[in-house]
Length: 230
Image (cartoon, rainbow, N blue to C red; front, top):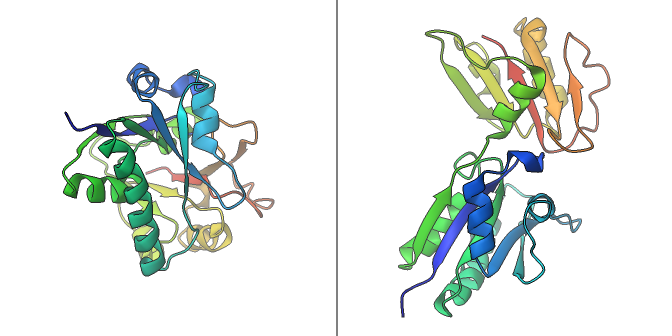
């Protein structure tokens, strides 16, 4: 029997109209949909996909990822999830694992797919619209200028304050909990006039802040992206 395939499917950062045709086709063709689920029971990537594809006849495998930086806990969870997916692949069912934005950018699919690929299964990635590109479109701004680099960091990056001094544009992702510290770094480096941020881009809860208006940025969600113009 030909081995089944594990697909990493990029869905929109929020707006379902940004899902690619290839992603929709892949979801339609896979009998099993693996969807990340938060500790509060939220399945955002699945909710977005449901607006584009009829999932009524699909087997849904919810993936619970702990919100922790503990490498050992994360590694154990990744192995458990990989075991569950491999069992389905072994039975001959293709599995589409949903990922917000693009699977190649800070995506959990990266960790799971490596384990599954090492076990001899086929693994393919379906590209999507990165969240920071969707944010730039919402802001009607560019991310780059001629001969200028673009730097992309998670808000948890240890050297973030020094990184803000680099030449070129900057994108800071997943900034929710660290927002006040990050904005402090931005102000210290005199970059507030070049800074905009979006929380929950493309979702009904979307919020946009720019033109130095950052005073009410408390309690923003995990999916908060900061864009600093070059």
